[in-house]
Amino acid sequence: MKILIIEDEARIAKRIERMTRNFFDKDLQLIVCDSIENGQNTIENEAIDLLLLDLNLNGEDGFDILESCVARSFQTIIISAYTDKAINAFAYGVLDFVPKPFDEVRLSQAFMRFTTPGKQSGRDTQFLAVKRAKTIRLVNIKDIRYIKGAGIYTELHLSDGRIELHDKSLESLEKLLPPTFERIHKSFILCWHEADRLIVEAGGKYSMLLKNEEILPVGRLKYKEIRHKLI
Image 1 (cartoon, rainbow, N blue to C red):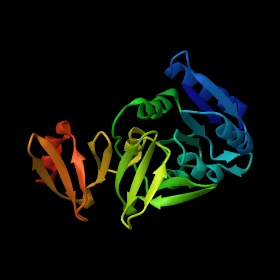
Image 2: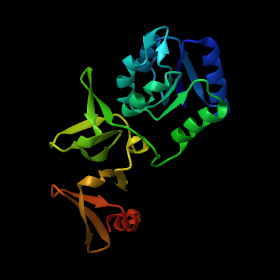
Image 3: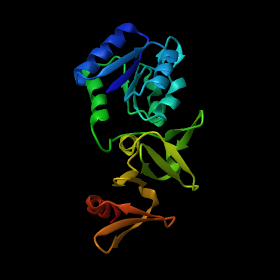
Image 4: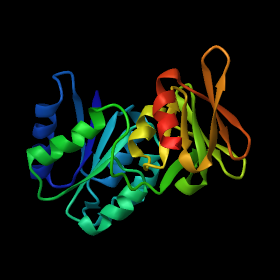
């Protein structure tokens, strides 16, 4: 596992590094950068799994790189004293916001959200950032009908019929999405507002009819849970 820390205060960076090593295994590779420029260069040239980002870096605003970070395949945890920016950070799709000053217990809670599979609670994500050519575009969560796994990418199927590719996996997005989204199949996450009714087919196959008349598969192990939610 490769983790990038972007923190300009050397003392705090070393503290984060120590706590991170205490939580993860010995195979962990840590990279520490003290500026936005160095952090961006590392992101462009290294395949990282997790970013630990401060929002105030020698007077520079960490939000300047946040959009490009959350559009990528890795997860982002903010570690910052600027708690007034927490709502905006969650809106952009960060996994957690750890306020300074922090202790090892609080940082470990953030790491647990990263390592625990499945849906997380209390997320306030409002946008998903997607890369298109050299630009970053924010997609409003409210515009997403469903999300489909597409190899190493995911497809965001939007209410206007467009499809946007996202670098994060279904498993990663599942941690960020609000409660209005549900994993209904190994390859699909559905916005509940788009569901019309369950369809039971011959041979024990299940499907979900959407309000726009699209049909998505429903996993056998998910059928009972979804049926109870629709009652």
